[in-house]
Amino acid sequence: MNAVTDFIKAQPEELKPIFEALRKLILNASPDIMEEIKWYVPVFSYKGLLCYLNGKKTYVHLGICKGTKLSNKQGILEGDAKVVRLIPINSVEEMNEEIIMEVLQEALLINELSESMGIKPSYRL
Image (cartoon, rainbow, N blue to C red; front, side):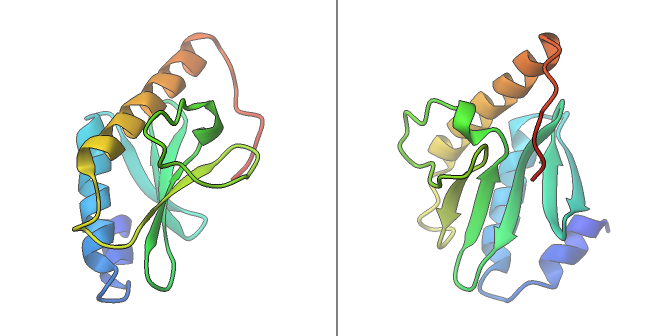
């Protein structure tokens, strides 16, 4: 087992399936995505910070680290933070995997382009 697995096991029963489904989806977005616990939550990286999962009382936030750079053509990104955008997930049943995968693929591309252009993130989560 790893630290992310341990983290998910320690979550409230009603949130575990959401964490597990999102984790699987994120890791399926690219074989090069790395996961770790950072800032007390699961964080996923690909050529820089990609996204993170943060449990709330009744839902899980999928935080997209460079969310303000995404098109949000799907209309699911929320928040007004300087850099991060959030996707709240209330249940596995309501989770639209296809749309979330589109967002993740765009986030991967943003990280890819940022690295190839030598752009270093100037923020901290």
